[in-house]
Amino acid sequence: MDFELKQIESLPALAQQLFVAAGECKIWCFNGPMGAGKTTLIAELCKQLGVQEAVSSPTYGLVNEYRGGAQQAIFHFDFYRIQSLAEAYDMGAEDYFFSGDWCFIEWPDLVKDLLPAQVFTINISILEGSTRLIRTHL
Image 1 (spheres, helix red, strand yellow):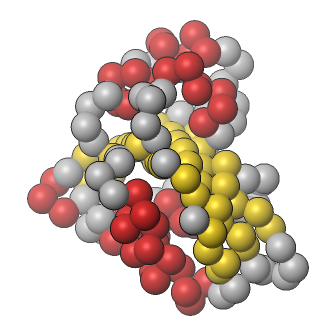
Image 2 (spheres, helix red, strand yellow):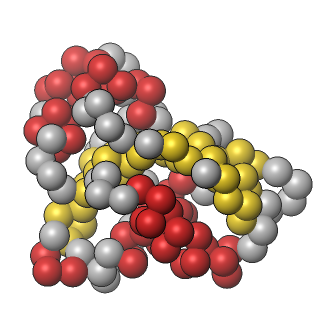
Image 3 (cartoon, one colour):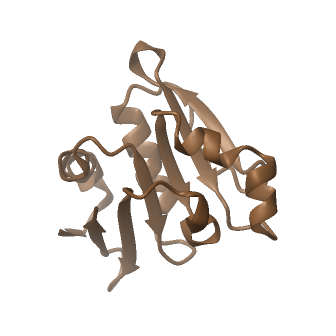
């Protein structure tokens, strides 16, 4: 499914459409160049899941944990800086991915061998100005 985001004010509606498109899948993989809006989109998704705190990229810590409505766990990963798959193993990434909790993963190609068979993939492309093309698939 393709979505075009022309203005940041449309982000809440886009997030709602993405939840519908993902169905029951809770492992979401975000691809796109630096500055494409991966973390911004994840922040909106977390907000809609009831997260009250500020959402930021876990660039150096690899994973941030948030609590949504009903205290559900939401994990936000950023694997941009890992040097090897062993680092992901060492942090217990597989345990997170198979926990049944929400997992939003930036730079997932670096850990693709650890991911479950079914993930919801979001590819973000930068178009003219601030317009983004969001292409999804299960």
